[in-house]
Length: 176
Image 1 (cartoon, rainbow, N blue to C red):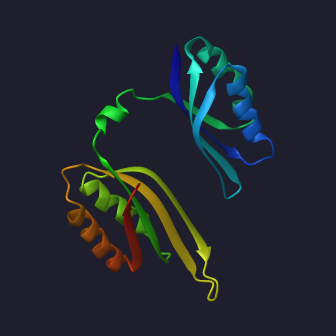
Image 2 (image 1 turned 90 degrees about the horizontal axis):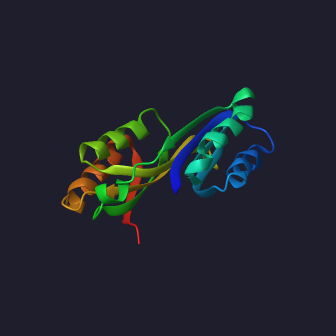
């Protein structure tokens, strides 16, 4: 029998860290099913969904000790089995946001979505200097799932209005 786990790792970026983490999974018969990895500042972060045979779990955790001893923060969390049931019938949408960076954009959008009962499945944000002026530009891409009984225009029109207030453009499309 196999367990699905979410592993998070954060710590100083260095060459070989991804190879070391994935090697621990391979040595214990595990499989990485989905992952996100990124250098943020000088730190590196891994977020990974993986499966691992039940009988390997305790030895797997011991093999992560060496990385912990190097200062990496690692957490393991067994996933919930009822996630797909919980969100059955919910509709996926992609949201893109672009505009001049300022405080509170992520919070305001997340607040609006949560208030509508919309779940954020994933979100990537970044800032980069505008090509001509160097002004920091904010970009966000998110995939959300919307309750099937929530009318599209009810939440998307309000989200567009919020974009106007935040002085950012917001585009919403159904995920195909």
